[in-house]
Length: 135
Image 1: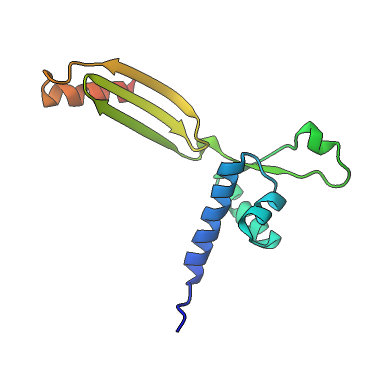
Image 2: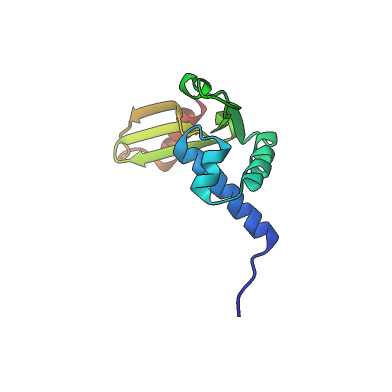
């Protein structure tokens, strides 16, 4: 007996595959994404249109070497850096590090501080974490 895949689950998986392919390749064309993922060109077009409308992906212009080729120029897709961000806080012995990373994986801001974590109270340590995050 085979277990069917729900349409929503398949759609979510295909979207994740497209985003992952763009993340790995940088600025691939829809054709390159189709080759990488094994999804059809029409599926890639539909998913990429949705992701562009949602602000997750953005179209990018073809590079000069690509634009010198004959035929219709390929349009690359890239992750929209403003789509989301991650705040990473690392607290270790006598050291606090905070970084903000955009959706494209680039470090937007980073700050590090040396702290005497062994002698600081819990509230003072939390206060330092909050202060560096707000900065």
